[in-house]
Image (tube, rainbow, N blue to C red; front, side):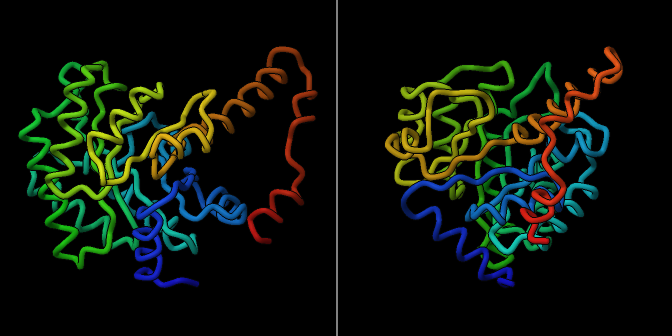
Length: 272
C-alpha cells in the first residue's frame, strides 16, 4: 500500500504533462472497482455520496464528508481528490480550518468552489472568492504543501454563464495559488481551449458528466490535463436502479434484471 506522501507525490506528477481520467466513486466498493480498472487517480463526488445518504448535493455535513473522504482515501492505493464543495464555510479563516481538516484525511488533492450555496446569489464576489482561495493555499502550505489545490469557477452550472467572468475568476484563482483550474459546465471545444489558454501553464480539469462526442483523445489534443465525471457514474447506477424498480412497481416485471452485473464480476472487480 502506498503511503499518503507517495500518493500525493504521484498526484502532483500526473498534473505535469499528458492527460488522465479521474473518475468519481461514491463508496468503498466503487472505489475498489475503479482502482482495479487501472485508473491512476480517483476523486470523491459530493453528489454521489449525498445520494447514498438520502440527500441532494450539498446536503451532507462537513463532518460526514470528512469521514467519507478519509474512508475512500484510505481504501484507495492511488491518489484520491476531494470534491470539497465550498469548503463548508464562507469566511477565509473558516475555509482554512476546513481545508486543514481535509488535508488531515490523507487526501491527495481537494477543490474549493466559488458557489455560496445560495441559489439567489450563487457566486462569491471575486475578491471574496480570491481571499478564500488564498486561505486554502495557506492552509495547505502550512501542512506541508503536498496536496493539490483545485480552484473551481461555478458560474456555468449556477445560472451565471458570463464566460469572461469565469475566465477572470480562473486566472485570479491561479494567481492566488490554485494548482489546477476547473470550470464545470464547459461543453464546446472553443470554451475548453479558451480556459486552457487563459490559465496556462497551469493544468485544467474538465468535467464530462453528460453524453458528449468529445473523447479523451479530443480533450488531450485541446490541452486538458485532467478529466473527471462528477456524480455521473453514481447517477448512471441510480438510472439502472430506478428503471428496474419502476418495472417491478408498475408492470410487475423483473426483466430489468437482465442488465444486472453478475455478483462474481462485481467481487472480482473489487479485488475479491
